Image 1: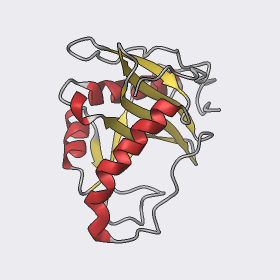
Image 2: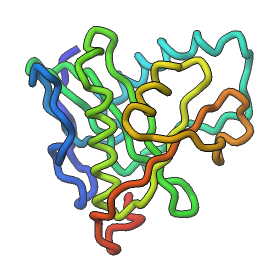
Image 3: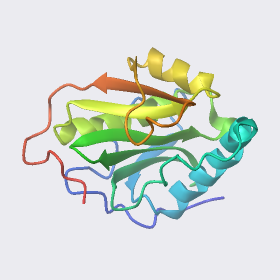
Image 4: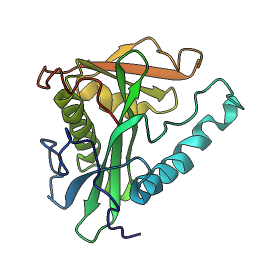
Length: 192
């Protein structure tokens, strides 16, 4: 589906165009900072759920998992659009309690994989976090997502024990990454 971003109302500290992620090798996408609730971002998350949920069906209900992020918790959602306006990749920056930050919902449409878009999505969110003065980012994936774990390792992330709110989930696999200090203290913690 073709989309026109409904809003680029990311926080003032976040520019409307990604500051430094690597473009796809064919240069065919543009990265836009959007709100969590933007239809393009929601569409990509729906596709991600359809792909990932069957991998965990054998584990049965998992009532201990936290609810999805809210728009108020998410500082920025980056979405890559093709020249025709199709959303093809996304990742978000979420504030957690205790001045902790995590990357959420890294996803690339199946027909656009292998072009460096997942690494570019990570880079866009990492740049947004660094601009806010975030020193360390975390993220959570699962035991049935080895391709995600391989991506994070390749991009300089290291394994950590599951952190709240995932510490009660035996199927969570968590990572962290130290970021260069580029943001100002006034931006630290800003996500509204």
